[in-house]
Length: 562
Image 1 (cartoon, one colour):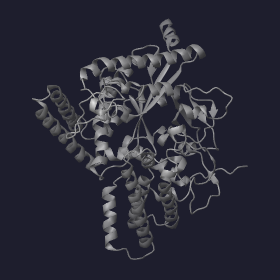
Image 2: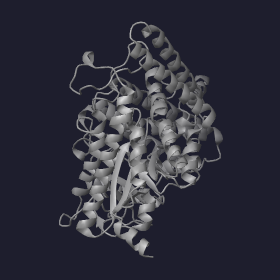
Image 3: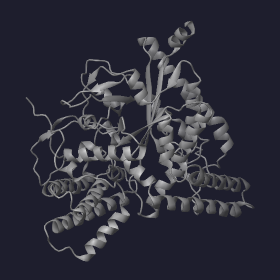
Image 4: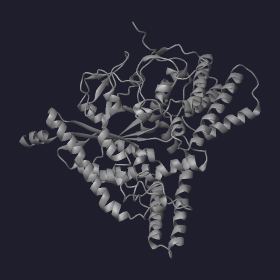
């Protein structure tokens, strides 16, 4: 008994790690876009699975919360993806062999690095085919079912909720997410990663840009209401979002959880977990964080032919021409362990300091894009392996999933959040600005059109042909709504691809909507339109079960002000 008391007294708190895995729909696009998914799979998703399973084999339960966006889940289970990913791994192995031959008599070290890449993709190919049977989601589900990780969801296609014109669009994004999550992982999600951590409270709202529908403000629901209606109990925000929350006269700490106050909601209140900005910046901020260390593999410099990476960061300010060759032993044997040890110490010190000040064991919560680990920071999964392992070995700390922590430590303090995100300036300016105004004009048009279709054809649920057209129109709308397009345009990151996707998805939506109107009202639909529909179904093969009714009316309309 005394030992139990001593253990409890020594316990300072929990480390809560949240990873957000997401990529927009890229299948059946050009090679560059598809390779975004293949690279993330080879360098992040499979290495994370390997890291989790290695810890489990060693008797350590990772207790990581990982969000897998519905649109990413749909792509990872797509037969076209499986075929193309196998092809991609074989091609990367071939390129590595060519580099070995090219550099064998010129630079023995580069030839050795090429052999490293050949082995990497050979191992990846074998694991994908044999260990995971081409089914990565089932591997994540197995870890979930055994209690080692928690899987949460996101908006169906990562739409930026604060900017959507219609509450029915947010309702549809959340309902589609829950339905897709349940199909892939066997149960409803308890948590959600709000796309871009984008939150908007209940308010009178009007579109941020001039539109054909007028500018008179109208009642909008708070984002948390849609979550509560779908039995989602928590979401994640950035520390700056919490600090700006009302009331202003209470101390708010990212080491506590809070209930989100807004309009009346029909079910349970929703909790927010807050990302610790200092602990998170130590990892994600490339300029000062661990991933920018000189010894680590450089992400940007690649061999012109094979696109394999053979150089280390050397110096963040250095021109690409002066990068030095990569030495894996230096980064893996020395720097990764050193950085993981330092990070574990920072986490433990943060929890200990808070415990000494408050007398309460709370949490240290960090959240990152999953693709940081492995894809952007090649050594990242190994870093996480040591951090999680060493936290588990320390009696003063432990790792916990969000739900585990919440079950043991329910929130009881209410806060009211402002419209905010984890983007630039912690507001909506990355996704709402003059550079992307034209994208929202198209999205707003499509949002209204799908509402008209939903209301007009509400009684035609048994017309399978009409439903086929309408479901594909919904898929095109979902992809059109992805926040990735505004992010890419605003930040000039493959901007042309994003602009092309917005234009194409909107044009295809318009064409399908017209087809639905024509067919639904008995007008002739030319043969080429049926061919077009089939082409859309083959290309954007996601979400087999969208429901038109989600767009016709809200399950719970916004409460009127008294």
